[in-house]
Image: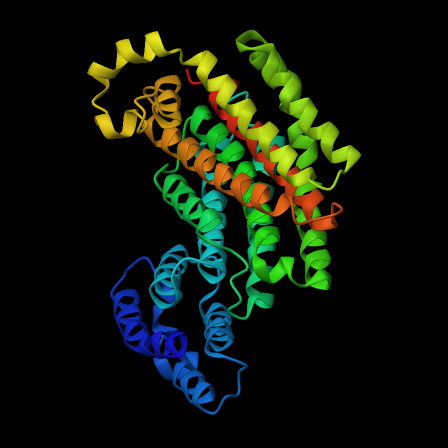
Length: 386
């Protein structure tokens, strides 16, 4: 009832949304967005008559109705409905779906912009353009499907939806002529986020408690991950060389994680997640040794509480910011991905003792986590920042 009341209360937000869109010169389709035409009043009446299974499903149906009228390519509309969803239901599956649509629209504009037009930069190839578009399109593919089957069951949590919102804000700030570093960061951060989305969905209690749903979600996640393997292999040798120059043990940890997945022991997700997190920790400690970070800290302007743990040790975040100094937005994204990868590792560890064999969901989750770790390390150590 609380969810229903909150969603129905957003009828006032609809009114504000329409007024804002009507006044926006950048949104010519706003003339269509009146409450009656969008069926908002009918939606609320249907909710009261229980035509929908619950208010969450009714709200999602209302969004899809709005999409048909306004078109999903209108960025101001997508921004407004993303904000509306966050206000109506908070972070979760529906908000992730709307954020991914907004991201896809922004990237769609970027790949049609000056950077990719002739004469083009040598690196701004058709293959790169396609990789970037497909990366965010797959986010839409997964979140759209999850939003259809969620029904308010919480298939996605803040572990993936908060980083997705941060990514949306990042790509939205790039403008129409981003640098190569910004686009490379967008690509690999997006690929890493896809892994977080998949692992988060597979970790939800709803999925874990429903064997049929777990298989279905695992199939969808595999659909998401399989096309990304080509992109992973494209940079794998560069990543291995970069990591070997920092600490050869990091490469061994990643390879050990993939070996675990192929062997599929009962705690595959836990073991692969441990390999992923330990690889990141070892790499950033080697690339940001205490002595160098301590020397940099006074001029960095970072608050002391961000820089040290309760025991006085340097935090992961400050090491990452040291490695990526001069690129604070990309460093913030990398820190967020690492934090939430660790949260998923904690969940995997908590489940490990309760399972007797690795399910399809466990193995898909393990692939997600290792892939995300590799893309984080690619952002930190491979892509050119010049």
